[in-house]
Image 1 (cartoon, rainbow, N blue to C red):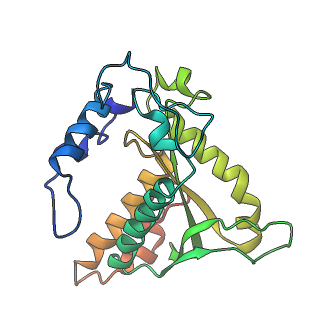
Image 2: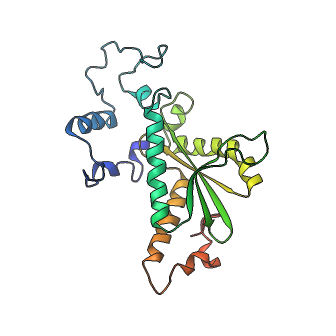
Image 3: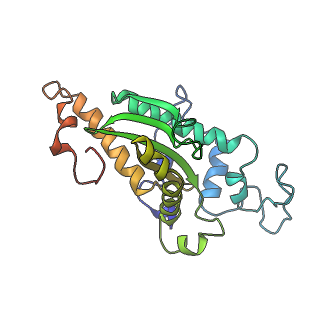
Length: 230
């Protein structure tokens, strides 16, 4: 169901940009489309697959689900950091005061987590928002039976996990925990979509000289998305 969700297939129609590094070479595109369609990217599905070089106990399944979720090696970290940096840049372009990787070493000694990949101050009138980015797979064994019939359930479950991990510390620090969860097939969680809408609105307001961004600080702006300043 994830592949049929709104905007999940946007990467297929977006204009590539070589100068920004936002493009796929023919080989990469061919492999990505086969994976997207549920086809084996490297041949027949009945061919025995090797074990993961980083997880000797895990077989590389024909549809590459383990390959895109393997937590060993650098791929998962690189993907996370690129998402973080892209969202951080969007905050900067919207003139939102933000900094990376905040929270470690703050608060009580029992709470050593770092709940903010991106910390955005002046999120609305009073709030400071702690954006925590997470990528999850709808085909993981724990969620696949639900994800088969409903899009976005993996992202919703990831949001709940982040709230369980971070709400206590964020509350102690006076921050609002906002998980930015995305599924491997491109579906963003509801909280992420609300946050992105607010950032986009902020950017739009800044382009209107007569407003000068003042609407961002009014009660009228704090609104239809509870806890979101838009």
